[in-house]
Length: 120
Image (cartoon, rainbow, N blue to C red; front, side, top):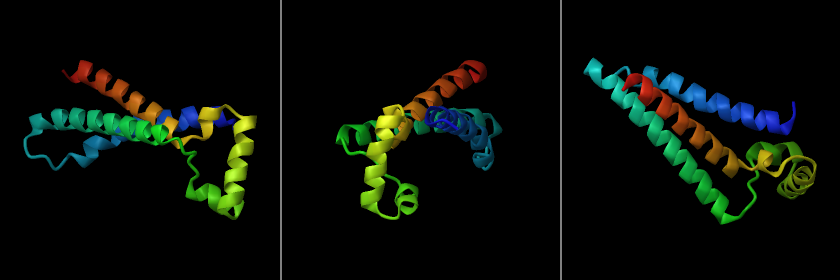
């Protein structure tokens, strides 16, 4: 699977999967008529917070390396080298967690707008 396809697929899956799971989480709300408002608020807040979190990480300017990257490379130095090597071979956004957070948060906001249009 290409890095770009994995990036966009995981962002889309997260932004569709999270709103699909929210109704299960808010089933404990007392009034039934409030469920849709809680659902909308949760999806909106998650999208905005994820976008802001990604933007803050992007502003920091540091290249993110995940725990999985370090374990697979058998060390932090090797993981950083691999990230630099991957940067030259694939699109630069595909290995940046900050960009993924921004894209996924934006997609969550789009899902919120669609839900808001449908649910009113």
